[in-house]
Length: 355
Ligand SMILES: CC(=O)SCCNC(=O)CCNC(=O)[C@H](O)C(C)(C)COP(=O)(O)OP(=O)(O)OC[C@H]1O[C@@H](n2cnc3c(N)ncnc32)[C@H](O)[C@@H]1OP(=O)(O)O
Ligand SMILES: CC(=O)C(=O)O
Ligand SMILES: [Mg+2]
Image (cartoon, protein in one colour):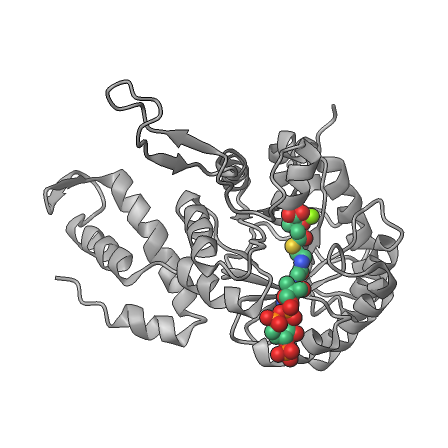
C-alpha cells in the first residue's frame, strides 16, 4: 500500500484550492443542531437560533423526504446566503456517496455557499477511500468557487466496516474534523436487535448474583450501555488523529433524562459534543458538554497546588501529580474555550473562588 509523504498530505488537492489546515481548530461544538431546510417551519426558526447553539446543521440526508431533496439543498443555500451566523458554525450533512443526490449537493453547496460552510458531514463512511473521494472533490470545487479556506469533513460511524476502519478514516485527510456515532444505521448494519435511535435497551443488562441461591428472588438488574465499545473505539481513533469525537442522535425526544445520561457518558469518555434533533435537546447538550462549576473549582485547586506541574502533593486526602494535573488542564482549557463564546458560562467560571 502506498502512503503519501507528509509534504503531500498538506498540499492542496487541486490547483487554486486553499491550503489544508495543519491543526483542526478547537471550536466549541457541544450541540450539532439538525434542521431540515425544506421544512418551512424549521427553516424559519434557524436565524433566531444563531448564538444559542454552537453548530447549526442543514440536513440533506435521512429524515428528508426523497421528494424534498432538491428543496432542502436550495433551502440551505437560501438560509446560508441570508443569515449572518456570527459565532455559530454552519455545517451540512450531505446525502450518502452512493445516492443520486450527493454530487449535486456538493457542487451546489461548495460553489454557492462554500465560504459560509465550516464542515461537511459525510454519512455511511466505510473506509478512507470515501474520505479521499470527498477530499479531492471538495478541493476541485473550492478552486472553482473561489473558496478562501478549506471546508472540513466530519464522518458518521454507522457501518460495521466503518467501525473496523475507524483509525484509517480518522487520519485519511487533513480535512478530517471529527467523527460522530450513528447508532441507528449502525444497529441495522450490524444486525443488532434494538429498534431505537441511540440510547440503551432494557434487555441489555447484567443481573446481580442470586441471594442464598434463590434464582427467582429479588435481584438488582443493571442496564448496560449498548454503545460503550463503539464510542470508546471512536474516541481513541479521534484522539490519536487529533480530531474530535461526538455522540450522535438520541431519538426519544420526550425522554430528556435518558438523553442527558447518554450525553454525559459520552462527555466523560472524551466526546466534545452531541447531536440535537429538537430544540429542547440544545440546552441539555450545552449543559452536559460544559464542565461543571465543581469540576473547574477542583481543577483550578489542583493547578494551584501543583506549582511548576511536577512532583506529587496531597489534596483532600488524595494524591495529585503530573498526570492528574493534565486531566485537570483538559477541563480548564475546555472551560476557557467555552467562556470565550458563551458569556453566561464566562460569568459562572469567573465567579469561582478557589480556596
Ligand atoms: C438517525 C438520524 O439520521 S438522526 C438525524 C436525522 N433526523 C433529524 O434531523 C430530525 C430532526 N427533527 C425533526 O424532524 C423534528 O424535531 C421531529 C420530527 C423529531 C419532531 O418534530 P415536531 O413533531 O414538529 O416537534 P414539535 O411539535 O415538538 O416541534 C415544536 C416546534 O419546534 C420546531 N422544531 C422541531 N424540530 C426542530 C428542529 N430540529 N429545528 C428547528 N425547529 C424544530 C417545530 O417545527 C415546531 O414549530 P412550531 O412551534 O412553529 O410549530
Ligand atoms: C446518526 C445516524 O445517521 C444514524 O444513527 O443512523
Ligand atoms: Mg444514519
